[in-house]
Image (tube, rainbow, N blue to C red):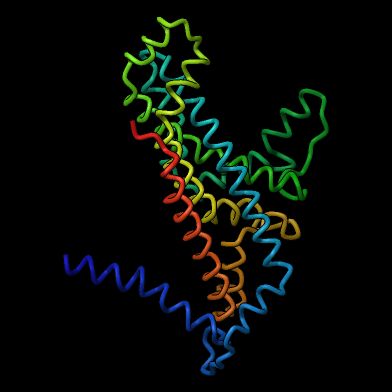
Length: 277
């Protein structure tokens, strides 16, 4: 227990504790001079349009990926439950994006979205549409990044919902059917309420994954065009590892940490609305 406790303190709580004083220092990585600026880095951050843009893009990305992944994952789980002997094959096919390395898959998606040789434009031309530059057009670039995010998370939600569906007693559906309830009525009265714990868990996990997304954005668009896909993690990377402004990057990291805490606290409060049978 002691090594695990030491590891937790040093690399979890220690890192967060170190960020607090670091965010109050004006320090460039490699420089021998440091200057205490108090809340100066935070004032600089809140006055920067690029920070608010990154926060807005992160909020849009998280809301879109979280909602779509949960809905698609639930629909996939319900459909696979009726697939009979092919359940295993479908589960493996849809769970593959979760197990795959996101950075490698993002490279594949970049070729799919390519304006000249991409599959999407080939299909668009085949049906009579004009080709578009998916990754270099503002709204299309964000849509492309969100699409990849949904693709990589829907399998995770599907597996969670499948596990939740197996815990619902068949007798409840049989009793509802005897009472004349339709499939939709059975879903609303039996399935959905009993899936609420799984839904809450899936929402929290996928929200945390979406807030922290970095590799797909870095490879697909690198935050462009003109900041249209600049999420908070990409801005943190740029300030800390391209501009080497360690103090300013630490202040952004503190906001990032605060967002994750808010998601966790929201989960704790939402648990009161969940049905645990």
